[in-house]
Image (cartoon, rainbow, N blue to C red; front, side):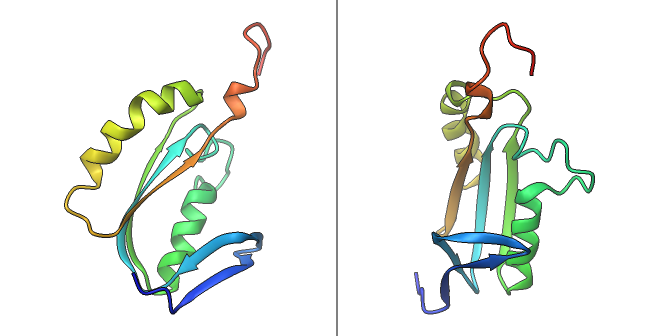
Length: 116
């Protein structure tokens, strides 16, 4: 993969990016996003969430991506670990450039008898 158009850190749509975040431009790829309600856009009045914003900005930079939002409310790391590989394989077939993004942990923090 040619990383000549790669940028690290900086700002993405008003959000500050850490030095480990890399954006690569001019890609044709598929991306699966796995996680809980934050991945699934719950609570966002625009129903776009961070996944939608990231994909919108990435496309505006000239990348041809297909995104799959595989986040769902209440998902824990155990549930994601049980399902992600099967889901990713069904979506990322025959693609040279593909990625899987995980964002989880919030639901792992709730104790059994606590109200969310």
